[in-house]
Image 1 (cartoon, helix red, strand yellow):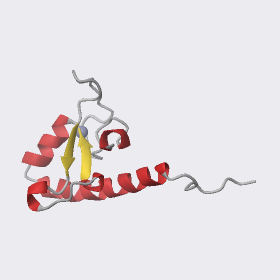
Image 2 (tube, helix red, strand yellow):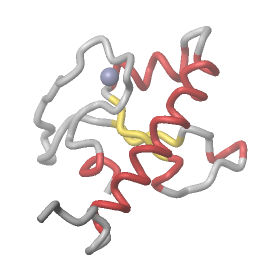
Image 3 (tube, protein in one colour):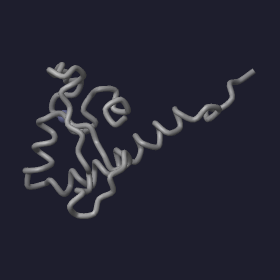
Image 4 (tube, protein in one colour):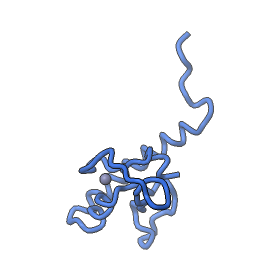
Length: 99
Ligand SMILES: [Zn+2]
């Protein structure tokens, strides 16, 4: 669900290679689904806490000195992405068209 929600692309707004796509051996894109708030720190195991990242963005979030800043940024991104995905899945959620 998370990778589909992401449109099969990295969801980081700061991705150094936006639009990056590589086919994996298993089929589908080479993307890593990451818990924005880590499970080990009681982050929820829910799509609203999960982000699809390219391998580079995942490594940067995990190892860079500003990983906490990225975690906060990604938390905002995934809340919006998840809310939009829920609206898209809900029939009748689109505003009525003009006559
Ligand atoms: Zn990326």
